[in-house]
Length: 215
Ligand SMILES: C[S@@+](CC[C@H](N)C(=O)[O-])C[C@H]1O[C@@H](n2cnc3c(N)ncnc32)[C@H](O)[C@@H]1O
Figure 1 (tube, rainbow, N blue to C red):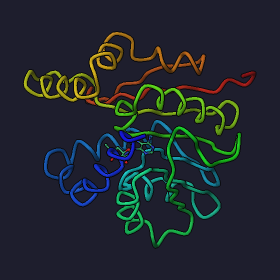
Figure 2: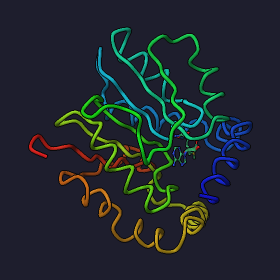
Figure 3: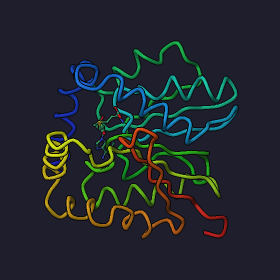
Figure 4: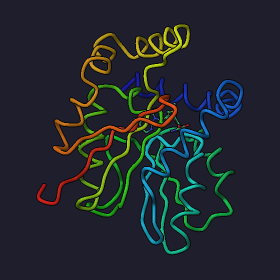
């Protein structure tokens, strides 16, 4: 419980710099990654799209445009600081809803969502939270719909790869081993139908976990 409190404080503090930090070191890359995610999900008019660990909500206006006035976009995060920044980006959009919640317990009805995304955050979840989150995502998804988890692919350049490994290490050695050796295992435990796509640049990947009709 203490760790969670510390993490929320950390993200609240980071929310003041997050967008500037991303723009400084990877603006184009981040935009490419977002476009890749949107084209993979392919949101349609009147759908409900949920973005978990939405942070400063950069994906939300893009989804809102795709689903139109009849659709709905929900951004969930446990940091009020991050959501305040997201609010500034989305306050002109009637079809966007921001919710302060932990992804281990989603405050949404079962089979109510057409697609769930998570960008550059799932690896950072604690092991138990990640498993609870996957169960919750599966619960809220409509049948035959999917969860799209986007992350960086292992970088080809040596120095960037070193930084990538450092990031994984900061999540704990067990988690790092799991991500490097068997990145879909955790998803397969909850969803039976799991696949992976890599962006044309080779820099991003999306793990797609589909809720099967019968499950
Ligand atoms: C690295 S940021 C990513 C933000 C955004 N998805 C993006 O791609 O820019 C991670 C986000 O996950 C949120 N987060 C981490 N653990 C969470 C949890 N258990 N429940 C809800 N949000 C969480 C943090 O508050 C933070 O905003």
